[in-house]
Image 1 (spheres, rainbow, N blue to C red):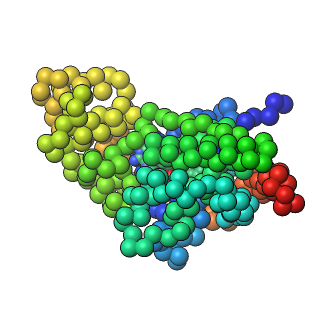
Image 2: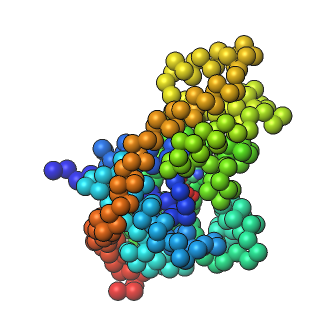
Length: 329
Ligand code: AMP
Ligand code: TRP
């Protein structure tokens, strides 16, 4: 049998998975499993770089595992594991710390944004992309399916791979970003910002939100804020809702609302109702599966252990190669 190539991606266990995570990342992970062996990590060492609740972390990790599987990640085809269960990630990250200038880290947009929100940004927050590079490069993954906000980090990963190979000899592969159609979903309450857990409840729709909550959030979505997208004419809010319509319904429904919009007779209420119903329908079986998975914690833990032991074999081999080239072993 021909060996499949690896793709790698991860999500922080910092809360519920939302529509942005789903359309930007997880949906394509599910599709890519057919062609590649997926390595999907729950990146707890990334999640602790900002304020978090230690009491909730283990629960969040289990929920993330249930989210991955309920969304369609098949543990038989892909590896699902918790980052801290494979300590090689941290060890390789330390090696990479020595080959990347601090100035490169300081210019990362996510660092600038997140450090601005904190009184004192930790060194961990600054070094975050180094750990991410280690995540990806340990598996010599050829592709990284992520949302648009992570492009810069994958580019830095490529730089790290290139620098290492040039300095010490070839070990790493430069991975490509794999982007999907919904790679930048905006907040419902403030469409100038990207949908994110950290903005607060009303800004995102979690795949696990009850139908009632989904409807409420869609119905109160901001549409016209007076800001108009330059060439597309629609306001940011309306543009975002059309984007979601495109992702969650069929071309006929999109065409119907497009026509309403063009003739200046768009019913926001009808558009929002259509979106709410579509998202309730789209994630109802996800929600059932998620609930079922979370009722058997032991089984979930076993899946994570299996994933980690498979991942670890690959990780150990690459780490050894890197250490050898660096004269450490
Ligand atoms: P995070 O929730 O920051 O751990 O992100 C996990 C994955 O979801 C990453 O691949 C992100 O790029 C992607 N993602 C997060 N927010 C969005 C969004 N609003 N639109 C599209 N993709 C997103
Ligand atoms: N930084 C990513 C995010 O916040 C999560 C992440 C960590 C990741 N390591 C990764 C994504 C490796 C892709 C590959 O969204």
